[in-house]
Image (cartoon, rainbow, N blue to C red; front, side, top):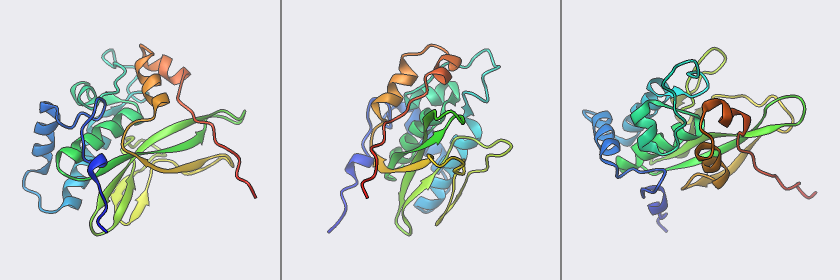
Length: 201
C-alpha cells in the first residue's frame, strides 16, 4: 500500500512552502540538479551554512527572532527550530516530503532539558532520513551523507533522547517560544521542552 505523504508536502502557517520567496529559492537551489537526493542535499547545505543560528549570531544588531520559514529566509537567521521550518519548506516546495523531528537534550548538570529541532526527509532510495541544519561550528559537524546520520549533537547525558515522531507541523511549545519572546536572549531563557512519560518495565 502506498504511503500518503500529503501532510509532509503541504504548506502551512509556519512551513509556508507556497510563499513566493520560498518557491523562488527552492527553484534556484534545485536548478541544474537531477534527483531528489541532490536537491535535498543542496537545500540542506544552504540552510545549514547560509542561515545563521540565532545564538551564534547574537552579537549582530540585526538578529530578529524568527519562526515562519519565509521570515527565516528573509532575515537569514533562526534558532534550530526555525531553521528546520525553512528546510522543510524548501524541500516541500521542491516536491520532497519533509517533516520535523526533535531531540531532548540536557542544558546543564542540574536536570534542565530543552528540545532541539531537526528534520526528516523522505528519499526514495533510503526512506526517512534525519538531517540537522543547525549550523556547524567547533564541536558541531552535521552533514547530509545518507544512509548515515551525521547530526549536530552527540548524547552526553543519561536523559538525552530522540523523540521518534516525524511531525508535519512544529510543536506548540516550539511556536510559543519563538513567537512570545522578542529577543534571542529571551528565547534562550525560555527554550521549549516536553514532558516525557516514564517507560513501564
